[in-house]
Length: 104
Ligand code: FES
Image (tube, rainbow, N blue to C red; front, side):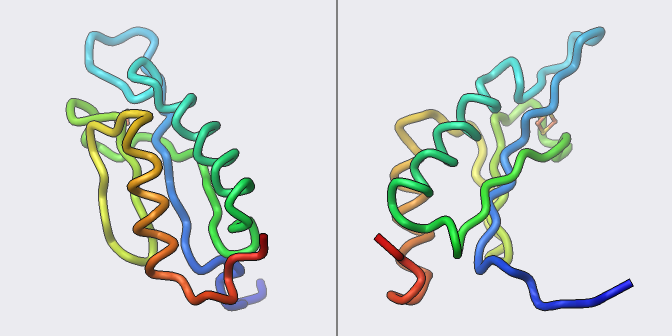
């Protein structure tokens, strides 16, 4: 095993968990996958790829409030996220980064 510093300054974990045989809500059925894809495109378009990672996550155990996105290492949890919220989320991420982290 090797231990290294985290290669990204921020990670946005977007829940894309899907429940197939359950009546319980899931983020996949509320657009989690689409949010992840859009965020990836937006991070790339803003020149943030080297500093910000967008990753799909499994269930964050807040299914009824989904779709859910967790921002690390900031310990921020966004719930009930809609596409129109992604710009606001990324604006907050950019504000918390150093200027050298944007490479456009
Ligand atoms: S399915 Fe997303 S929090 Fe459970």
